[in-house]
Image (cartoon, rainbow, N blue to C red; front, side, top):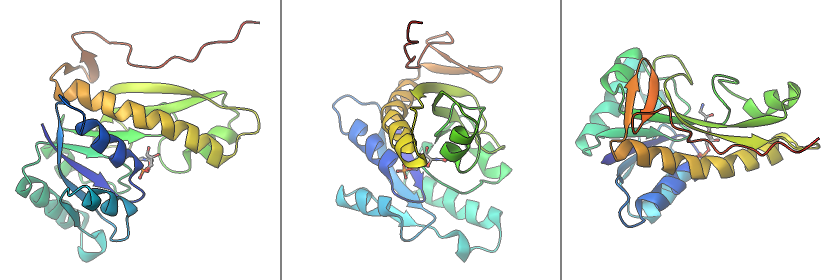
Length: 214
Ligand code: GAR
């Protein structure tokens, strides 16, 4: 399956997808990386691996729809059949989302539907959560919403800062995204009533934290 990866920044999830795609027998390859920001470090990661990388800057387009049309054209031109958003921090128009319906995944650093949006780890700490995590889901029109493919739970430690927590969740993200992409690319997922079945079941694709004894 030929995948277009959308990024806006650092690109560590892009790297984890690239590493997965480079393993023998992985059922997906990255056809193009597109960033809406010219200075995204992820562009260099792609270029170093000789993966076509393009900048489509949202500030060059007068409307969300015209930006999305350019994005769509670039993806199709590259032969992409599927999209992985990996730290892509733009809201996509309903038209774009519909065109790529069930053919676009996103990763978010929380256990959705909790903590959609920005500053997730700060809000998790403020709320006093003991457990957080990350989610890979199919993209729908509403931000950080859509059928969940896989989740990983991550412990919040006493004394965690936004940075230490983000780093622990990111480690889980780097394992989860390739796993979720593999399930989808192998054709093992089916969306029924907005829930993702894997091999026909609501499979447990989570890593579950052990609960300590009392
Ligand atoms: C990741 O933590 C990803 O989950 C998050 O942005 C970061 C990108 O890092 N995405 C969102 O918050 C989407 N709502 P990366 O550029 O190193 O992959």
